Image (cartoon, rainbow, N blue to C red; front, side, top):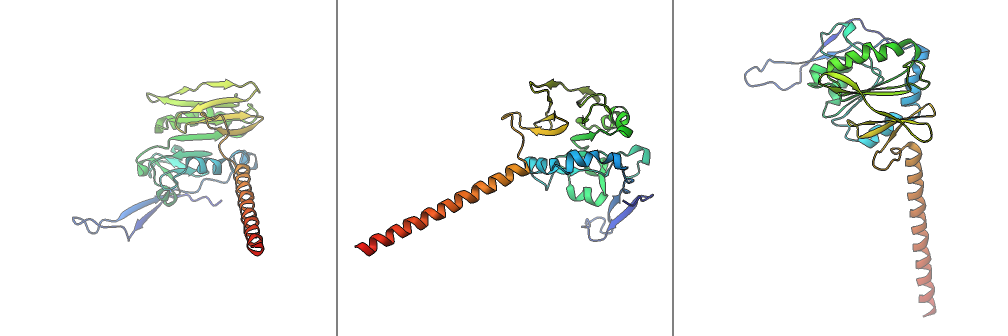
Length: 252
């Protein structure tokens, strides 16, 4: 990934112009790419990308036109914020936001979106585990992000395997994490209306109403296979009926 040292100011010459200021141009700021991650920092891909977790969330939450599912790009309070005021979350979700603007900005700029993300998640790895529980926690609270979650496969980097915070009067308050009968850990996200679960070192997203995991790739494949089997059975039944009618007609 290429690291750019400066922020680019993009001027959109095709943007609509008002009657009073026809020469007014729409400005778009492009954040630099984050630096490349070290191999040990690819844990986030293992728990969010490789197993389809983000895809499952996108399918469950829906509405890609106004929902941002972001990863591996900067979040910044404003276009002019210095580098030390930017962070790279493993996953952010923002409702009632502008995905196209997110792509144009090459990241999430709070002042451009007119709101902070609603949900941020960090996946633990040794080199940044302490920062996730201290500096990033304070930073996300300062932006006004309603929920901040942390997942740690082993519990060694964050000091706990699953943790979540909810913003109350500008300060993060820990959310309740329960231990289930099978040893899994679970907490409820009011923002997503989902339960996050640590189970055997894996991250899961559960519907609190049904207690079932949200649909996965396997679920989608099984449903498609069942629909195909039902269609083939129906077609076979139609052929049987047609054959029976033809036999009766020939005997008449």
